[in-house]
Amino acid sequence: MAKKHEGSAVGIDLGTTYSCVAVWLDEHDRVEIRLFTMNKETKPLLLLLLSLMIK
Image (cartoon, rainbow, N blue to C red; front, top):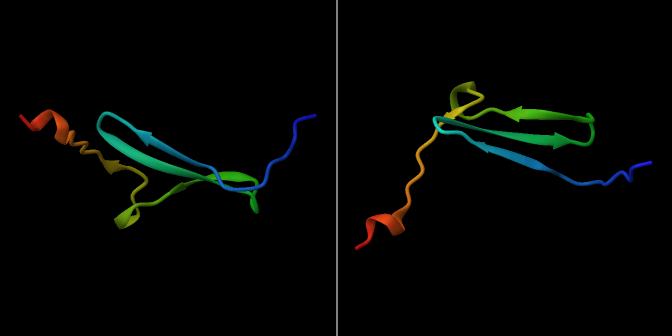
């Protein structure tokens, strides 16, 4: 039988266009997608790599 661990787990999906965050809720025994501003499940993604821009 698998051991049950208590605590939090967070999953972050950094997609090519949108991103989202999911959190494991022990008290409800399920995963919940967290809402961003304006009740959206996904957020447009902008990833800036500054080291590539510095010459």
